[in-house]
Image (cartoon, rainbow over all chains, first blue to last red; front, side):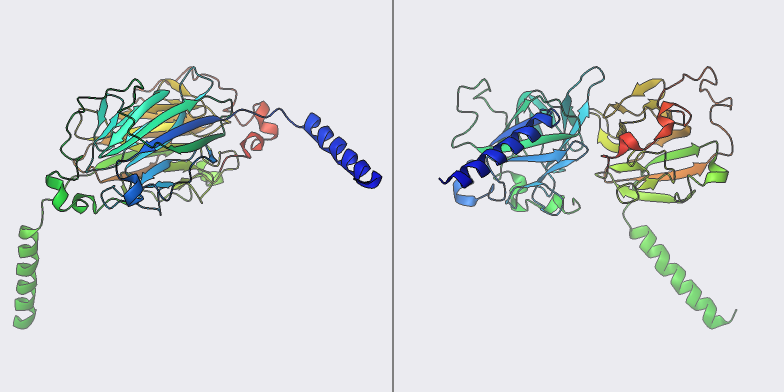
Length: 201
Length: 201
């Protein structure tokens, strides 16, 4: 490196440090870490639209929709058996809390949503615990919340699990898994899986 | 009326009746009746974007936003002191209920929202009672819910009140009205009423 290059580098470093020292203290941001699993994820590519590992920053006023329709859903399942909007997440603040919380609402008329041990029907909602397994059909989504200071923004980060989240020794019941009529693709709904779903958008 | 006109009319009537008799039984629809009042509504036209009296049908999946920004709000207040999004309403279904319920969430960082006797800060939410006075700043909105059978749709209907909803003998406390720092246009926020609001969309 020449002397000129060295002094340029030193000047750039000094400039960067002065900006770093003057900048506002950066707020930490609430992050929802979502680990997903579907038994045919490798063959069918149900999660191929989801960008794994990178964090995405969203405004806390956003309603985050999960489902088949990419026109209205931020995170899509490429699967004819998924509802156009399967469920949505929203941020809110509990009365005496300084951090954000998540609410989950089942938007599917066809599938029940299992949130922890609780079953949600169409338009039923629940507050999401800090660590919670969400299930519908053959989908498993482990949702884990990391608290942050910001009330304006939050982040999401997706991870693909190579194996079922029920088979690991991770604190979730392995068996018996309750049978849900509308869940299995082999159920009576199987003959026309999207029929009852036609009016959803 | 000629004989020809008469038989045409009879044929049309028979046709209409046969369609009427064959049609599916029409579901009743949940309606949210909103009676609004602002002390300077006549001079300032804060409600001039709202279509009064006609019912509007909306899908139950819709997040209904009230505020200053017509790009994101279904119902707008033409008022520089209103937040871009002041609050939002959403439909949900209680676990053992067959009808829809409303949730209200304060989306304003600047103004508190008074829902009945309860005060909501930024991102705080509450289930809306069947009859409830909602207030922020000088705005008064009496919300009354009429239950319906449909889970797919609901309706809204707005009425303009000629007088304060607090001054009538309608079951709401007339006085004392608590003083809320962020509420009055004459408060300390008054020097720059939209400043804290800049990041809202």
